[in-house]
Length: 163
Length: 135
Image (cartoon, rainbow over all chains, first blue to last red; front, side, top):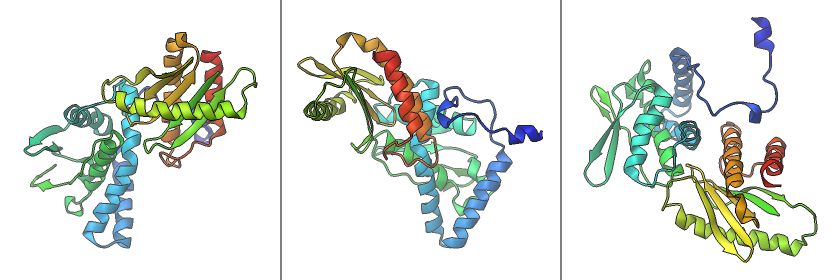
């Protein structure tokens, strides 16, 4: 056990294999603990509700382009040219890669779209009232901006569901 | 003679490598290469929305010089200036492997997207790829 812990990965990150999906998944409790601590830290520094949502959104936004490139490469997906296939790709392929399930895509009038996830991972052990889903909203915004689609993303809680 | 450039989403160059067999090219020629790649960026931006494949083949010509482009799903552009029109297949493989290397670089949380890639390991890998596919 000890030798396994001490063993360092050989070579640079460029030697690692990222093209195939690893079977190992991140433990939900570990993720929740880390995410919860991050939210607690942010809340302590910015007690205002809007501020914490903005911070979470920005954190997610930094992840978006990386997730888009990684998932597209693994799934050998092409570039998406239209908004509907793009959102479809997000709500099925990317959702499956991130959360292990797919979300439903909703169409609203006036070019507005919604992605509905009835049980967002960020709200599993954290009170939904804190707006943890803003993190997922930020990821979506990052992905869409990276793919050159202009957008604004908002998170709404529809009792008892999240969109 | 091949020149490889990665251009980020905000039209800023983030990596450049030249594979020149013999160093006979003067600095003037280097400026011409940069200029040609710059010019090809406009053609790339036009063609990007007409096809959903990543590899765009030759997007621009100037006398004997061809510029091929490859655009990732995150709209990062890989440009290659070359003078051998018959190496398209090799180029495609080169771009694919370069894409994987680029992916590994941007997955690094300490790398800020759309900033120059300064990693010497990345540079060495790209040069090895250039030797493998383009010489």
